[in-house]
Image 1 (tube, one colour):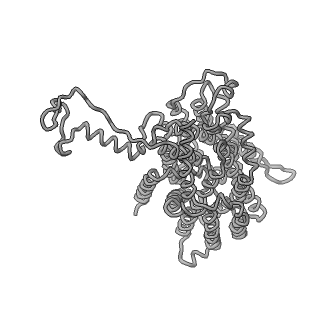
Image 2 (image 1 turned 180 degrees about the vertical axis):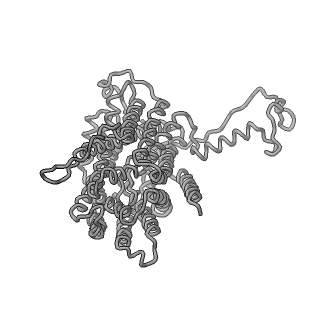
Length: 603
């Protein structure tokens, strides 16, 4: 079968899975922003706050009463004749193929069906289209992920340890996302809390990708290598400056994506919170946004590798530079009223912040100081800090992904196009993992899922020893087939282990500070991921694994996999909060909703 046909079939399968996901509970909001080309250790995920939207989504579903809308578009001027026919019926042309149905009605029915299927019943207003576009671009920015890897690896000549260290560094902008929310809420830019920040982030992101794509416009093209005659060595003077500039540009680009994600999340949460009278909008907007980001990520997964076969990494960055600019332009369609008050007065006069750094149910949380105080009070509770510390330990175990990437490219000779196909297949496998969780594991206790996925994933991770030692060839398994099969299994187990951690993080957030605490927990989660990557970089350096020496890569793989089991020692910290499944927790909330609604009505 031709490669084009394989890609087409893969995309068709993706669309079917996404369509199914959109109609299930808006459950999969933990979209990964920084997944590696391969995922050797299944619980290692870098996450954002999409699950926060899901938390609000569940609250809206439970607190709002279902309403049935009946269309009453009646024309009282029509004179109804015999058999229910109208005198002006001839003004509407009839299509005999449609069984007497008019063209207008058939067209309207088709549009309604498209809206119901593609937009989950949500009216595709310019603002909804803008929000979907922002999330689509957020996923499509993965187009430059492999370009970043090969830029650092081939052009800047960085080794596996340095690559892993920088990978952890690039996660830092995602660890301070609550600060972005505070900033956009407290300091409106040119009178807007959302629109102006999206435009600014888009422009800065476009600039960072542009300078990377154009090699900094020749600023660092001076002679890079000079010979020290006295010492007889070669010093890379210019390379150091270019490396620093490249890292800075990549950090800025990562920061703009993180900031845009916070602002977009704030818009979605606000629209969900304001849509109490529209159950379809409240229940489907999060799924619509996640689906848009997933489609963007799936499309970019394959092309991130195939483009590198016909152009250099910097050319890919030049193409990617257009995407942040699209976010800045589409932000003009966001429906937002200009704020006339001075920024310093907003915190005293605004009763409810628009972003999710505050709770709409507690007016006291509108003040930043009271929000911080409530957050600290919540964190000191053992029921909060123990699960939070467990999540940190769970995510901070070391990883050898950077070294494994060098082995696949330098030793096995796998090119970027193949790595792009691996990313595409693992992305689809992740959706399969999501479906399996929703179908079979929602009622299983979180502790049990985390325990058994860890136990099952360890031998899967250790199976990479067969690839490292080339024993798979003796078994008649080609390297490419082994990588595909191994990564598919690890991706599925990765989602099965990842989703319960998001549910756990949302569950330990007490009322009143659930939004800011969840955002803080996700920042801790991302920070732990950076810590694990840095530990892996130290181990890679210590074991002497380089771009050409993979003698101790097997030992590194064993250490990283076995160390992923030690957090299970602290699994007892999840007693109570992690002893039930997601369905059981939702049933408890539903049982408490009637009394909560009665109390609200009495008030």
